Amino acid sequence: MKDKKKILLVDDEADFREIMAKFFSRRRVDFKLAASCMDALDQLAQDAFDVVVMDVTMPGLDGLKCMAEIKKVDPHLEVIILTGHASPHAGIAGIKLGAFDYCLKPIDFEELLEKIMLARKSLGA
Image (tube, rainbow, N blue to C red; front, side, top):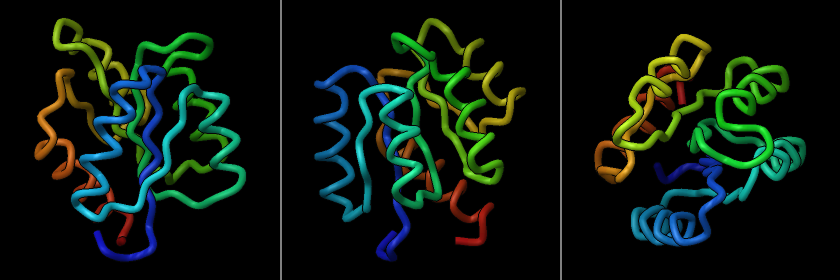
């Protein structure tokens, strides 16, 4: 993941964004952070990303509704949904609505990184 492609992480929990920023930085992944759907849409208007990693449960537009808005902007942008360990149904619903895949929280970081790489390969990245 050493090229100029970027990951956009969307999550309303500041602590989680901080942990993920450290994880991505240590692995030299180019990334940006967004605290809400509206923040993510603003960033998508300004920059190119090849994978969005997004929490389902957020105030305002939740992850599934936000994914629908993102797909309107870029139908080919891959989205990986993050959902709580007690609610894999939201991840499955996300896949039915166009998500590339989902991960359960608490996150297995290496599993998430593998899914990001697979999503990028599906784009020819």
